[in-house]
Each structure stands twice: as structure tokens, then as C-alpha cells.
Image (tube, rainbow, N blue to C red):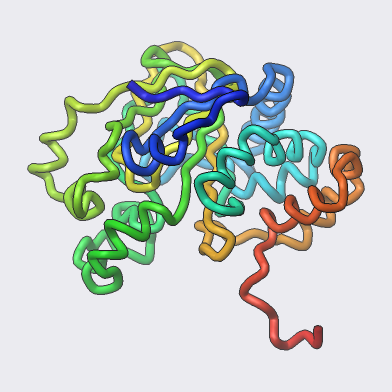
Length: 292
């Protein structure tokens, strides 16, 4: 069972996320109009071969990276409706302090798309990130055991926004609740014996359109097998600490320039504007070549 929270009650959310389940569901975060508009934008991108890309580890998944910049250029109002949702931001700030964008990516599973390999996420997705050279020994070289088990579990949050409703039928994300608490789980999942031993413990997440799944970067998870004849789309956002390093590089100045004159931005009060811009562009590192 994965705990569900609504905007009027987020009591015990910190304990549920970090100390117990490692994953939570936020109900009714976005209305269907916003989700449908987002899906329409995604399909316009899918039809543009220059933006169409297949996931390197899952040929049945279409991805769009750099959503912050692309959507800020095409539809900044829609972008702000998604990334500046009060309920979602309140929860994220409760869990991370002031949550900042590490990456925004569309994941669209094609009809009958196959199940993804079980894994944990950035920064120690050894089987995916080029830096790790698919070599688990590099974990011990660069990361202490304390960092692995007690720091990185609080480093970032993975956010899946269900722009389409999802269930076992259309290959919803599969998780093992509380698996982020397994000691050295980043290394264990790379061991075939352990990998095979947890295969029967995954459960499919059920989300209505506009619901949000938040999960710990150390939680064992995978994209499910899409049994249906339709695509299943979602927006994946990685959030990091105010002083954390995000997974993707962003052109912050372009993104900010794109949103400054949008109707949604002009509705914000001065402090809300500061908070939003800080989520997009963190205060460090500073450019010492500029005379401030």
C-alpha cells in the first residue's frame, strides 16, 4: 500500500516518505485541462523528428528532454501552471527545504511497450549514467557508505505527474515500497542474485489523471509493461536541494527570459516570483568573472 495525501492534509508526510514507504501519492494535483494541454504539446513534439527520441535503455519509450526550455519557449503559461503548483510545491519544500529543478523529461510508453529493468535513480544509476561506465566498483571509489545510505536518500525526489491515468493495464510505474531503506541498495540491485530475488515484490502504482507519485531516488522501481493499445504519457521531474546538483544542464537565462512576460508570472507577488526563479536557477555556483 502506498499512502495517499490530499491538499488539506499532509500530516506525517515527511515520515511516510523518508522513514517508511519511500513513496507517496498526491491526489488531484492537476486538473484534466492542464494535463490534456500538456499531452497535446507532447504529441506536437513527438511529430517533430528533431525532438523525437527513444530511451537508450527502453526502445518502447519516447522521451523529450529539456522540457523547461522547450515548454517555456512554446507555452510559458502552461509550464508555470505545472511547475508552480502550490500543493505540489508545499509538499516538496516540506521534504527538501526549497525544491529546485534537476531535470524535466517526458516519458511516453508506446502500446505494448515492454517492462523496464529494475533500478534506482540519479546520481547512482550505474547502468545508465555515462560517468559510471556501467561499473559498480566506481561506487566504492567515489561514494562513502555513509553517503550512500544516509545522505543520498535525502538528496533528491523523483516526481511522476500522470498526464494520462495509469494502472497495471497501461504499464504504470512499479515500485517496491520501503526498498530505499535496504542497506547499500544501490550496489545490491546490480547483483543478479539480489535482482532476481526482488522481481516478485514490485507493485503497480494506480494514478488518476493529474495525480502525482513522489518517490525516493533510492527506491527500487521500473516502468511497467503497457498491455494496452494506447500510449501512456507522463512528466518526470527530478527535484534537488537548493544546493544540490541536478541531473540535466539547463539554459537558465533563456528559460527565465521566456517566462518573465507570461500571464501566469505576472499574477505572482514579489516573493512568489523570487521563490519560483530560485527553483529554476540556484544561487550557486557563482560566476566570479562577473563583477557583482
